[in-house]
Image (cartoon, rainbow, N blue to C red; front, top):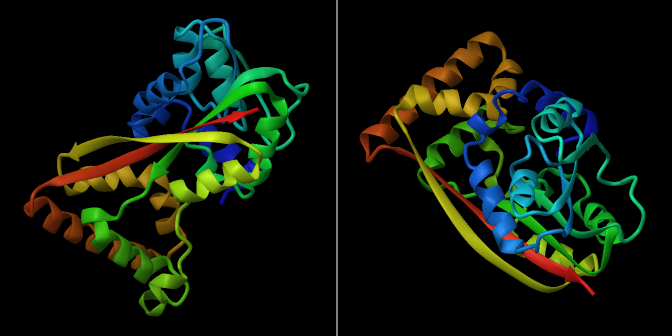
Length: 262
């Protein structure tokens, strides 16, 4: 989980490369807006907007779009590139909007990184007008052929190393958990669908380069230098075996969730 300060620091650093690193964001942003299916003129609030994948897609549908994010640089860039979008830094737990200000609230890949997703959903409901819609995307985590990387990460980064039971490791939010939170927050008529976006990579070095800005660099830097070099060496060995056994393909998928505030 991340604090607001950590989110600001991370995403401010990634402002120029965010949608290159997170290759799926733009496509899933379009999918999420298509799934929500807003009519032209609908008042949309995009929460955790980042570089604006969802906000841009809503704007293309003719919606009146407001965007907030913890990263001021992300919002500054979005406002410069799309002045039609009202983009500003904001706290999604305490948004400075009146009750019932929006017809649709969207959040792309936001819920799984929050320390209190139920409080966020409750705030989303507050700013929605009765009859309004919430539409969310959730990264669907699957180990798949990267089981070797999970085992390596547990050995180097988990408390107790490889001896730590896997069952003790907290798992990512599931689509069932998100649906349960939506119901608890007072939303109704839940619907969800899955999108899949596999991404092939050229080889072991490409896999390491892709993972480094997604948190792996910080994890390695926290290790003693010799231990960090050992991790890199063994990572590349594992990636090379994966590459030789059918190629390196990131099996990315997401679920889209839609619900209503009656």
